[in-house]
Length: 394
Image (tube, rainbow, N blue to C red):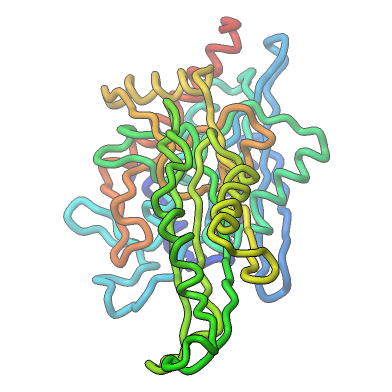
């Protein structure tokens, strides 16, 4: 059995529903310590939501003037299974059917972590004393609130002055075949809760009430029609979407006293949280709504956009994928957020590269077994390419 597949099955068999790690990181550490890694466990969060983080590193040799560090980043936590009776097989019993490996976390993202580990093992076997420094940043708080996981480790590393040069995040980024798409950035995310105040009353006497839905409607029409920005060569235009709208008592003869909408911006590097907030507030005010009197709004910035420009890491990734698969990988910044947004604050080059994502978070999540070995080989080739760069000064 290929080693990456075997390790993936071991990880998948552990029911590490967020924030649980279920000893996944211990298993990873047991593979890393014998090949020279120093492993540190960093815990966080309240007692009823305890988060486990692994920071493991191996410093490169002094064979070049200045070493650089590549970090493999990922998460051992998985989303809940959903109704167990809907699964064809137990989600925490790795099961093979029709050339696929089924189980929760197969694609997102325990197979990537297994491929990370085995790629490093193979790299160090062929080059026991590389100049390249290596590290792993693994959390059990990516699928949850993401407040005690990677973001905390990054802050600790920043305080220590530990420098990261390159990072590969193992998120499932591919579409049809492993390597056909990678993420060289992600959009920012900002949510808002807008509460429009009115006066509740009888629907037959509207002059004695003040309908907040009616007050909101003109602004809502403008907000839906706005072009927030045009995007750029790397990012699609910023979008604004309503996720929830709540108002009314449930009775058909009562004018509601307030209306609440939850909305979200997914924004490019062409906009900032401050610029988007200002533009939205200007629309509300232009429609006659006064802050504090007619409405209140609460903002939550979930993450800023990040972008990795062409450089050593991008070249190493593209070359590795081309050599292993023959594919010219597509660069993309679409999709949801990832822990890359935290790592990008302390690491100049971050790329997400992983297996196909068609089944992530679904019932009967799976990965095609034939995708596992190429994924591992891509990671190993990235290491080899970056090591060669250090020696050539490229």
